[in-house]
Length: 197
Image (cartoon, rainbow, N blue to C red; front, side, top):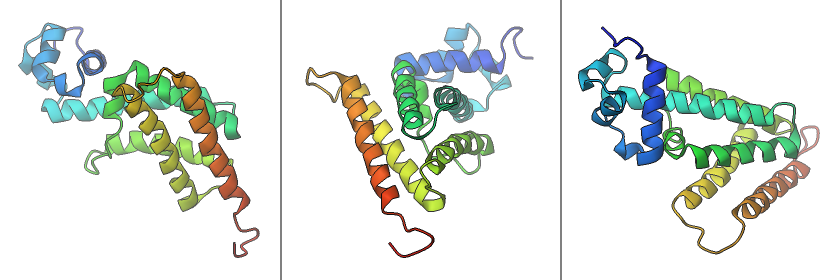
């Protein structure tokens, strides 16, 4: 029987705290059990071992990230929406480094809940790119570019890759501006009425 008061949400919150403070390498069933003051076998009432915990934690992280990004982008469009989305993304990576790390892996096609949580993020980005007239593969290419820009910056910052004493937020704003200028250039060169570029 599951321990009274211990449910999956409490378990995932505790696991996320461990991942954020010790990294995902520091997350084990033993460290989680110790944090929750339970015996390790008790965790199996909620998760299927460490792989099951990481899969559920990935879903949890993707849902948390989606909520933050949606809140940032709602009611906005175009460049304003992308800037708000980007700032929320970097804020999430800064405040939840371990949980953020768990959102990056391509979902296992045999884990439908992870696939679905990831799809919600992609769908949000597709809607934002549709505002630029980018659809289908063009939207997906732009999404890959934006994701690379955001993750590249977040990753370099987390690893201490920015050693010069310059304002990181200003660097990030300039990087997003460069990405948006590229999107506008692509959009201006798109064929009109199905004609050849």
